Picture 1 (cartoon, helix red, strand yellow):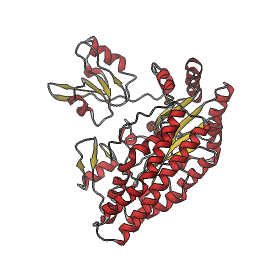
Picture 2 (picture 1 turned 45 degrees about the horizontal axis):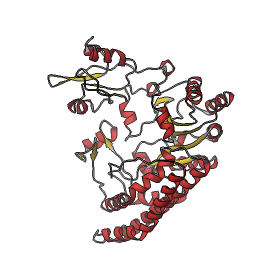
Picture 3 (picture 1 turned 60 degrees about the horizontal axis):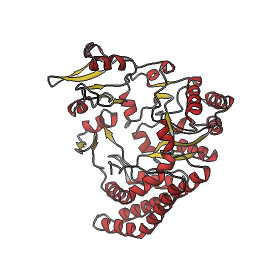
Length: 438
């Protein structure tokens, strides 16, 4: 996705949006929306709009309004050789360094999985397997790292790939990436996003030696029935193995979790509690998580067929109800619980997941705070499951929630004071916004 700011001569904006929301943006005042990738058409599009040269109908993938009627020009195939793309402009890299943020890099596009809820899958311009994940060569990636390393002093990278380990990125590739960095004397630290079922010690070890310090992993759920419903390729056992492997090599893990969907059962929630209690080293972004029903995904289409969706009127995601009555009570209580302290939670975990530039000791301190938050969450989760399981009415639910919030209040105050102290000590600034989905 890309966006160009407003320009003169009455041209409002250009926006890359994917295939589903072009009309929303056009009705909001944008002149043109580009569905999908745009490197191959951006020059001709800008010329057509700014200099009034060329016909928009000849530019692949654009959407625009003509007398209020939506026109969508068919898309063309995306770039297959990503090495041919120029390195991105780095006009703001100094600002990122000043704010002690990791500098973003993209080494591949897409993901090879077929998760039912995922917009990456849904936004693919071609559903065929070979087009759904494309990568840059090791040499090309290291070339860009080297430029940033020597020209801008960048030492900390966040690889924003949807899935960093895919396709032929195997143990040999991991060693090649490590050796390439070492041969050019590039000592870096980096964060990624990976799938659990592709990780082996032969992949993790060389990447850890290359500077892999943190990653998110799409665990999603601790129940096999829920994972099958999501069309996840990993099993609970593979998830556990991946988490243990990353812990062994000292890679901080943020688990992607999806605790609720419309068909969540109490049995699955108890399985997830057991999973969270066992995998106590990995952190997450809060105990309350639900599957987003985003436009265009297989999950959303499934719920639309079942007439289980309604618009929330605020976001581009739909709303649904958890069908099982007991599970729905747990859903409500966990959501209200997380809402009561989400700012502190987001602040603490941001340092590892965003992430911020810290020394090793700083990450250990932040991770310790993450584990304190996690312990409070899991304890409340167990309390709620026990309460709901022994009571067939919700008459006391709010009382249980308020008592737990009151009893834990001093813990959250202490954690907020500790993270504030860490930020002062290391010269950090937190500018996160309130979670709009709570």
